[in-house]
Image (tube, rainbow, N blue to C red; front, top):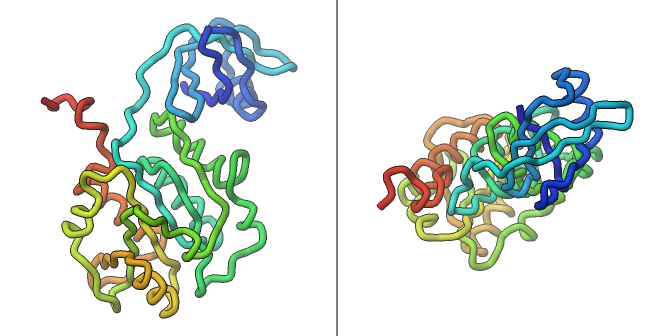
Length: 253
């Protein structure tokens, strides 16, 4: 069982779990003093720990030993999905976390009216961040992706970073192998995924002017949340997005 503890001390000093994590340990999992659990700090460090206290004041654990967390990819993947309505954005954040992305940058697009509550959906403690935390706990990652405030397309494209824009069937784009080649031997890649209504002509023109590479998944129109995961899966497989650094692979060397 894994719990989030953002302030794990390096010297083994006991640490209190955040309120939500303490409630989950004590009242959902019903664990008691003396039980062994794993705690991680969201930045890649994970420890085996012993529960020292379960009370109204909270839950206190003592880190015992460092354990090897799930390795992160050598390629830093950044997903920039259009902000979607309802629970669809939650699904994108959850699945992207499990796919190993390092950062999620929600995009404000021309064809989607974003609810006011969605604009507050980023940052530590926010709804999307809590979704990412839950996904990290479930899949074994010790890293919780950072989630930036929603921004317009022009604010997201990063000079020097290979940027890929997923486009709908009506637009032509490079093949999957061609796109994957852009990411090889790079430290970071940014993937833009549009809304269900597609990118506007102005957005496509702005992306082309910025040197963004187009990628089409084929003749079928996919749901926006599904398209993000299909693209991540393909790019991850072909470029090593989802793989650990070469030196850490069992067959390396």
